[in-house]
Amino acid sequence: MTTLALIPAFNESRAIGQVVSDIPGWLVDEVVVVNNASTDATEATARAAGATVVTEEQRGYGAACLRGLAYATTKDPDVVVFLDGDYSDHPDEMPRLVEPIAADEADFVMGSRLRGEAEPGALLPQARAGNRLACTLMAQIWGAEYTDLGPFRAIRFCDLRALDMQDETFGWTIEMQIKAQEAGLCIEEVPVSYRRGIGPSKITGTLSGTVKASAKILWTIGRMAATRARRAPRLRTRVQRCRTGRPGPVPPP
Image 1 (tube, rainbow, N blue to C red):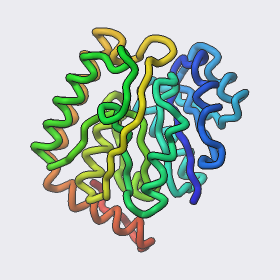
Image 2: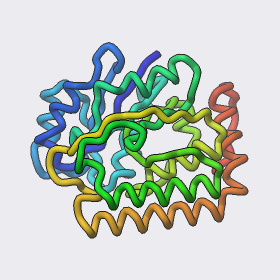
Image 3: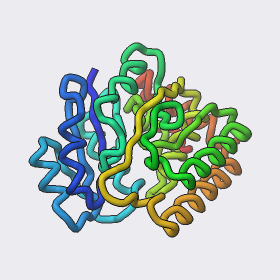
């Protein structure tokens, strides 16, 4: 089984080297850092640490993830793991996410910071409140059992491609979770540790970032709830065709 770690990074030169270095080499075949229009030494630091670096000039978490996904398509790994570049996640805990997939016990594994151990002050009150609201809405609308929207997650690459991800900003993580539920993927949550990242948070560290992210997440939930009846069966068909290798066009979600 081949595994690719994907790290979107915007101005993370102080942290990215440590993130890359702490990823278990025995588990991950390639570490890819998506330099998201950084103005510091993120790219050089990531390369020096041994990562492959690709560039996305359009700023946005989702845009960086989509660029990384395009690169991953040229490698066709079995599993892709996402994590942040500020060293708030614990890269050494990556086996917790990958092992259920390797054992065919899950297709999509979420790292839950709320079920794990969070360093005091790492998960700010606004982040906890936003998580709680979003997960409650996903439970009510989709029957999902998520406790977190955290970035640390692993998914079968074939399934990820079938989800046809679109969001270019703050809605990427919740779009993936909703589509995974709609597509009928086997989803598992595992506890992960969380600490204060190196440098200020790009989202919950500021009032404006929190407001923008919260608004986008709620808008994404509303939009996807309104269109789920026609999208869900198409996603299930996409996943089935991806897994069976059937030729022919795949219906758009």
